[in-house]
Image 1 (tube, helix red, strand yellow):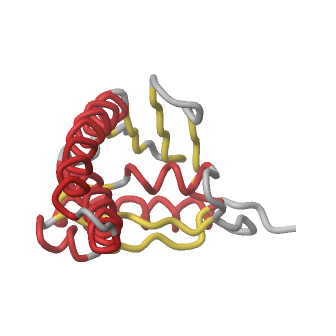
Image 2: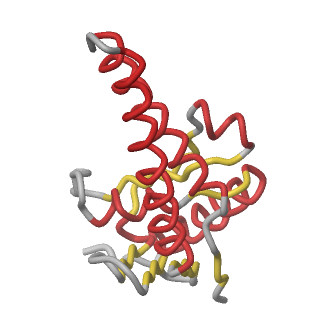
Amino acid sequence: MTRPLKPHYLLILISMLKMLVTLLVFFGIAVLLSPNKYYSALNLAKMIIPIAIISYVSMFYFWHSITINITNEKLDFKMTAGRKNHIEVFYSDMETIILKQGIFEKLFGVSRLSIKIKNVEKTYGGEIMVLEQYLVFKTAEAQEIVEIITNNMNIALKNIPKY
């Protein structure tokens, strides 16, 4: 059984909102510290609009190139763009899988899946962090995915030979 999945399209919006809030905080500080607040605010506004547009287009390009397949033995992540373009996580290597919701995720009714792999520490830019960045689904669908993966993890653990 293979179940193809696509991350929820709100992933792009949530990422954009997080980025824009961060930029607006720093731009606000820059305007407050500036001696000529009007021109500083105007120039910063002229900078933030192209940054937002370019970021949105690039995020949409990456989102559009993603395919996630749930098979009986592994979670298979493929992306036609980017440097980490193929990640396989076998259920026998998984320790836990949980749902996470931040402020924006709760606001839009989506959940992010977080996977813990045995003997692997999450590092920035590592395969698991890249994978988790795109594991965003509607909450009901995410709960269903967690059930499927948990069942497959239990089956995989039972099939491991004991020496």
